[in-house]
Image 1 (cartoon, rainbow, N blue to C red):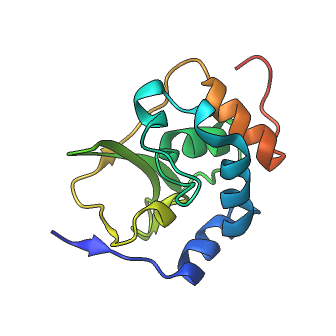
Image 2 (spheres, rainbow, N blue to C red):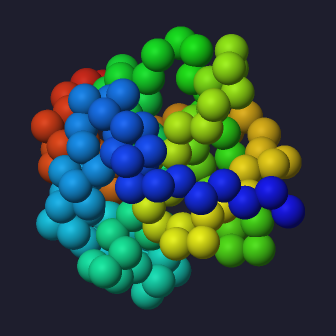
Length: 140
């Protein structure tokens, strides 16, 4: 197992690549609350750990808003708790995980594969985008 534990500064730097700060993301997710999550994830979410369970919704929102550079690929890692979504730089191999803040002891990103989005945008991703001020076309 190869856990990566990012410092606050590293997590904030990852967020800033998308024009936001980690504190802005946390505040937005607290504002949205668990209502944006699937019912089985709503029970796991707490305002003390606002990034928890939001990896797909946040990743989907930045992708649908067109904020992801071409060199970043959406990744999905299946684990004992379900799946975790994040980005990986296909040139450098750097992990860009906007919701890494949920993992207090780090996360093992090894074994992840390319992820994909569902064809239709989720209501949760629309809520994340709206809270962050990102525009997503109505056609999605």
